[in-house]
Image (cartoon, rainbow, N blue to C red; front, top):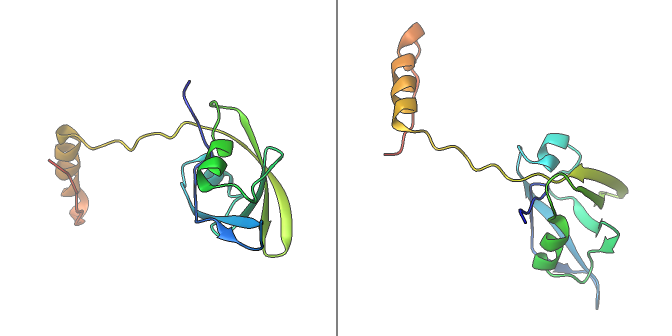
Length: 125
């Protein structure tokens, strides 16, 4: 089955006590569910994912909790500063970035001269 997520990358797990750990959001895909919702920010601490406490889990175990079938619901409890909040997101499949093909590049290059503006067009061969 195809896996979906919420579009966040996790930082390293940090020990906060003898058996307590924490993990923060390291980056957010602006086109993923978390980025589009604006409800999660870089640096937010993940506390609970779908009623499972994150403390004591590895990054891989946490990632497995974040993943699920497309359009399924992922409920998170996050901490930002002293505030704890619940966030509900719908998982989505990550869309691969479209690579420009040569005709796209040629079209962009021919349009670049119009209007008297300099436009740099990057195309990989």
